Image 1 (cartoon, rainbow, N blue to C red):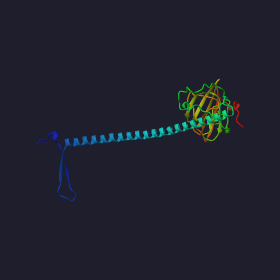
Image 2: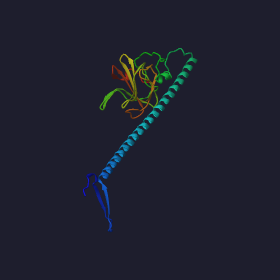
Image 3: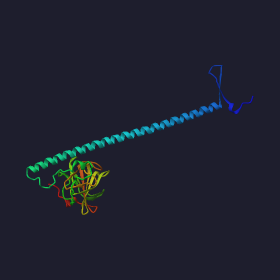
Image 4: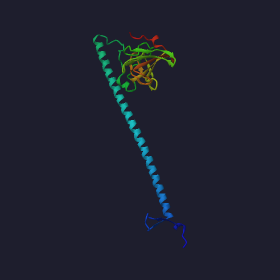
Length: 260
């Protein structure tokens, strides 16, 4: 009897151990092909499912990380707003005290001055006064601090500014009136502020724990622009303060007298 190609079968003989009876199983090649195709399809489906699960798990982890970052930014913003409100209250109380002594007509900045809350939150700045420019002449902290390193060209590289040790969250103040030309964070200076004062003068304030000004904002001399900290390449709380003339660092102590 002739067997057609499509009817060819695979015969498997099963012999039990110690037994005499045998069993024979016949499976057609067509059935085997179908079984192999089904097994391949199942393997492909499992691979796709595993890949999809991995992708969704990675996306879920990324979403969780972003949510944590948003939570941190929200807390920082709330802290800034609370600080601005507190300092505005202090400024108002100071103004009331001055008026009691007949000094309300003087246009002298106080030791702790911040712009209106709307400006600090990134408003359009329409309520900000036109403050002009002035060369840096004021000590950049609300307290004396301790100079731990000056301007020099050391063996391990240039040090273009002063390092002033001071407690964390001390007030950092603008050394002169001007405009914020840069504000942000990098690996070296940490959180920093740069102010342009005109006539080629600019100042840089680094390693802050928090900045309180925005890019393009006008500031006046002795305005509180940040809080001291130890961000960036830093071994402890301090302010890194630079004075630059036409982009070249100069010794701040030649222009600014350190408080006694």
